[in-house]
Amino acid sequence: MKLSIEWHYVTKKNQQTIFTSEPLAAAHVYTLVDDMQKTGRVKQVILTDEHDSTWTMKELKKYLTEMETEPHDVTVYFDGGFNREERLAGLGAVIYFQQNSKNYRLRVNQQADYLVSNNEAEYAALYFALDLFDELGVHHQEVAIYGDSQVVIKELNGEWAVTDNVLSKWADRIEHKLEQLGITPVYTHIDRAKNDEADQLANQALAGTAIHAQKEIRKR
Image (cartoon, rainbow, N blue to C red):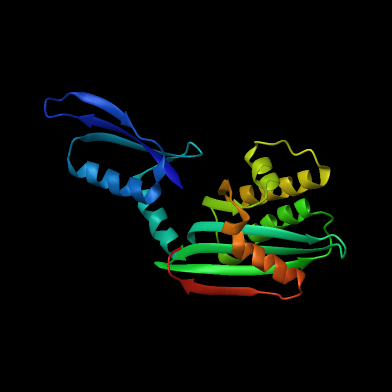
């Protein structure tokens, strides 16, 4: 979650002015405002999130305390592979997150025989990754999502129109899932070489090797 700070500042000579910040990470906002208030010259502070809801420092502190024990700083990599001859798809998802001051990586794949194209496999792979949020308990936060499919990333970013009816249904499912979980996605297109973990998982799923593994790691 990101918040904007509006603070009313008063000088020693009682001159007043109002400053407004750009959206900043919640933890950074708490540290800044706490430091400002110690000066004794801040008359009023208004914190506003991406949904135009206002927060008090007490509410923000409680949120940050709760988030420390829940998965946060979540990053998702997804990839879908499709074998046209066998009409079989492989879905791969890698999720990095922090929880209780530790860093984790979840690697999961799945084979699918109900898809009809590579682009659909890519969309299905992203939905598959988001579905894992229920298992992890990820909700109400900003999530970085990386994929090597220009179609999926640019269509969900709104850069390209979704003209295919099948893909449009997947896009709707993904948007509904994100809304349901309170997730704000930040989509980024990457080269296949930078998506090697998810790509490998998708290929392993196509070969019939199922993987579902979580481990503590050094921060990526």
